[in-house]
Length: 413
Image (cartoon, rainbow, N blue to C red):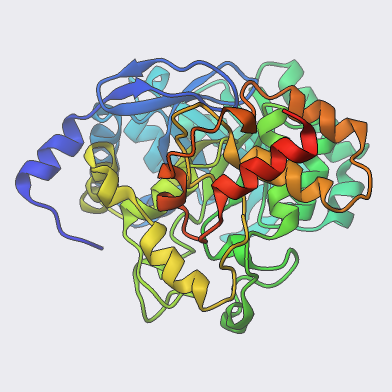
């Protein structure tokens, strides 16, 4: 990971919140940390959160110091997937006396069985594991209860109507969890959960490499990345769009591709190294995303991630790195709805118009449903001033001004 100056570190630690919009909801701000509303939950969360992976190798005092930096930097969201009592205990100690400063996302079905991790839907094991989680965290509730790792549509279908889901509902009714979520690495499974109406939050692996792999492919197999899609996987596009429209928040895991692969050109599936600022910027550019989790191992790495709060637009810009890699995969000229072209001076949601236009081009006669979606947009293609700023930011060389003219012809406005 990149090295920072003492001044940058001090600035990063000192940073707090600014106003942005997420999932169509107004945000509040405090300093440089940005807060977003967690979907429909109403919870104001820092756009950078923390994972629990690093806590396993920390002493209690190291965990406390790590949490000091996180809270002082206005981070207020943590995911705790690890069933290891040592990890849970370290986090509980680190939060002692300031539980109210952190929104906790815990997993239902992550179980510590005789010294080993087990993923389970067995209700009795889930109960034991969850009660232990509350005890070690020294709290009587958590904000988000995650159904732990559902990576297959068939598995999701088995969960629906099961005793396991009944137990999750029971926890919410008892106030032990405030909101229900699901974690997944599979876009089809995550989309099925989103459409079920059961979840308000989805923890999902989202980064520029995973986005261009077919849904269902093994993202942990290096061979998978030999033939990347020319754009974002269509199921992922549908997932992100559905979550944004229905105010289902996505909490991003694997921001750096798992094990920091995207930060190393030799290990990166994209064959180019991105910076932490660029990876965070990519994840947070999605309108459905509320939080990107920092999977850091120590205070120094956390501070490096917090550099994002004070990073320049140039430091956050991932377009040049991705456009070079994209051109090698024949994606030039095709819109992937990535929203890199924003902001538009006229307020046009270019990605949404391009997506509707692509759908319309499949029909001889444009369905009224697509027309209605287009007309419901606040700004339309006819408002384009042809300034060209969007095209200068597009990593895929999409002729956006021409596309806006085509949208006017197709939709009449």
